[in-house]
Length: 130
Image 1 (tube, rainbow, N blue to C red):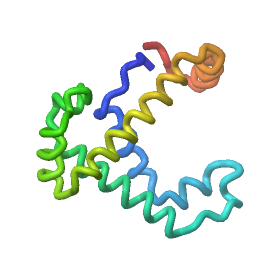
Image 2 (image 1 turned 90 degrees about the vertical axis):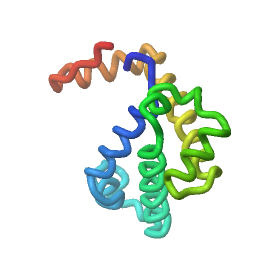
Image 3 (image 1 turned 180 degrees about the vertical axis):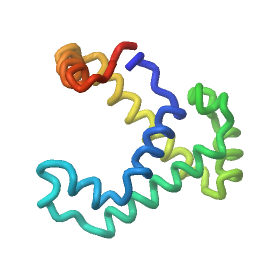
Image 4 (image 1 turned 60 degrees about the horizontal axis):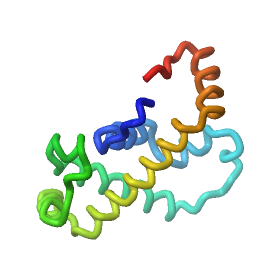
C-alpha cells in the first residue's frame, strides 16, 4: 500500500497463491466462481506458468528483486541461464510484473476504492496504513 511494488512483493504473492492450493479449489471458494466451469487445461497451464515464474524469481539477486529497473539484456540472459529457462520467459515475467505493478498502483491511487478497502479491512482488524 506504500505505492512501491517490487518483484519481492510479487514473489510473496505467488507464494501465498501456492500455499492456498490448486486454482480450482481457490476459484470454488470465491462467490460466483464456484458454479463457473473453468477449463482444467487452462488452470494447469496457469499453475505451470506461476511455478516457472517462482523459479525465475529464485534466480534473481536481492538487488534485482528490490529494483527491477536494473534488469537489462545481460541480466535477463544470466537469470535465464540460472533458472534453466529461455530469455523470453524472463521477459514474460517482467512484463507480467509491470502489468501487476500498474494495477496495484491504480488501486492505491483510487481514493474511493482505498477508503472502501480501509473500511472493510479496518472492520476486520486489518491495517492498511502505509
